[in-house]
Image (cartoon, rainbow, N blue to C red; front, side, top):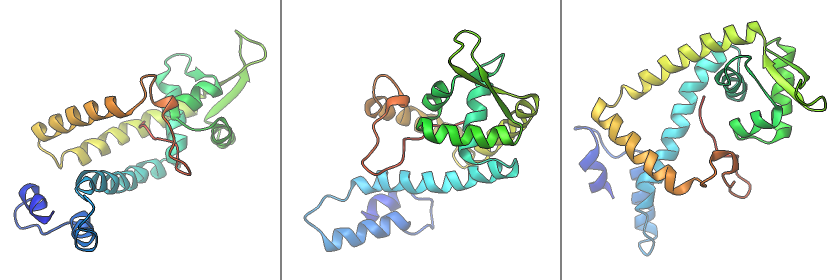
Length: 195
């Protein structure tokens, strides 16, 4: 286990948190193959660390990650920057109940409006307000700058290879009809995408 870590770790760096956990499990349960932790454990840990760094930008703009996701989904829709609540829930991979709470908060902040759909008088549409568009444009620009800074820890070849590997792996794990219907683990959170 530690040998694998040393083969890929920067020179002079000792075993990381995951390698120490693996070594402990290998000692305590030599009958169980703990090698998957080398990848899954590091992805999980990296996900938490990256999310914490991304959250800083959201908070700078007075948003939670979920609120950023809603505004980003509306902005990506293009003019007139609106979507039905169910469509927003699918694009952000949350339940319609959770979406309602996010929309309520964003509406109170003056960043979105709700109205009846022109196409279907019974349906509702959520749209960005001018203030919402200004905010998400600013926040998204800073978000991309933040992601670039985080990714710059890798050299360009490493980043390309990691993208290729993750894209292939995701294609094998994610359902064919996309992330909106990705299965949830029992008791676990809904799968996450990104801005």
